[in-house]
Amino acid sequence: MIIVFEGIDGSGKSTQLKLLKNKLESNGKEVKVYKFPTHQNSRIGQMIDKYLRGEMGSIKQIPPELPSLLYAADRYQFKYLFEKERKDYIILLDRYYISNLAHQGGKFKGKEREEMLAWLENLDARMPQPDLVLIFDISPEKAIELIERKKRREYLNEKKKDIHEEDIEHLRNTRETYLELASMKDWPVINLLDEKGKIKSIEEIADEVWKIVSAYL
Image (cartoon, rainbow, N blue to C red; front, top):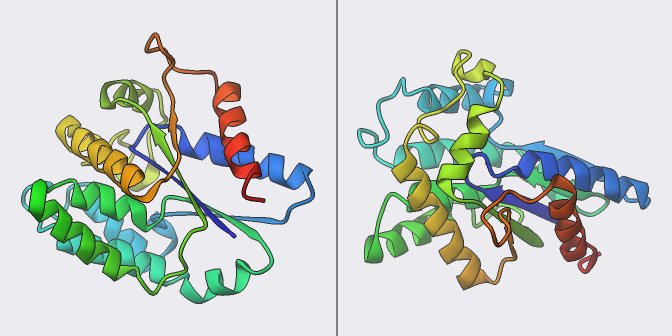
């Protein structure tokens, strides 16, 4: 079984994934965890880091197809491994090809977005497909507040933000695309903000995650 955690940067995916891993293991499940991109752990991941640091140019200077192909190549390194492990383990993925759809597809509008999304989905059509995709939703403004609290990241040469996170308009378009995809594909959306616009507690969000996941087990 493959479960994917998705959402814009700063949406708390990694925290919730760790909590779900612990919950599953406490219930006797065998779990494997992977995070994309692989960053410094592979040659392709290192190329992606250069993109995220802006060393290849700004978001508007680079054709979206270029990072899309890099991200896809990064995932295809795991194709055979995932095909094997999904039979015996619950695989939890911190991002998958859905991130490509949202971040790169979000750079377009209307018909162009539809065409780009179709091209992107075809890129990963031969990858093992997820059984469940969870979308963690938060406003870009709140997400940036949370990103500012993060530690500096080694793969960004000790910066806090990558080129996506530095561009709030990019985050808005990415979020919009995530929600469009969730609506089209009937993926559950977990809203991180309560009715008053305050961030829910980690425990409250974890309970929502478990309620959804346990129904698939």
